[in-house]
Image (cartoon, rainbow, N blue to C red; front, side, top):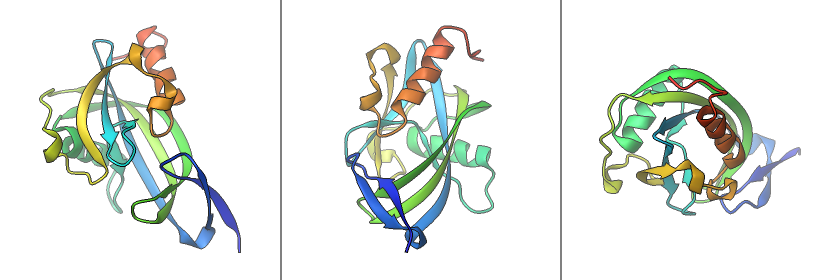
Length: 164
């Protein structure tokens, strides 16, 4: 039986049999405004993550991104362009499920900026949308992909990656 190394919420490695993995494409929004980035906190760990989440069967990636950002922040967005892609094998401790994740990261612009209250967030694992100063963030502040997310932010702030 083949097993795959999956990362847990605490950053540990858990071996999971391949047949126990669920395939999970997901889309995440990189929303930057005035040297700040839109983030949410993971309820289980308190670490930051981008708004976004799983793409449902039959749903277009950009439609999933609009839905997820609205559910988690209350904001409407414009999806501008794909800026990163990552493959991630992860074990979600609260449910005991393991995933083969394909994560698509899109640079987006806010159309509306009114945020919902934490208790209105339609995601069991996420709480409280925040605008966070990019300069105050470190890679380890993120649940995953912190280094890549901050690299994208720095490229935008330096003008290397055009921001709409």
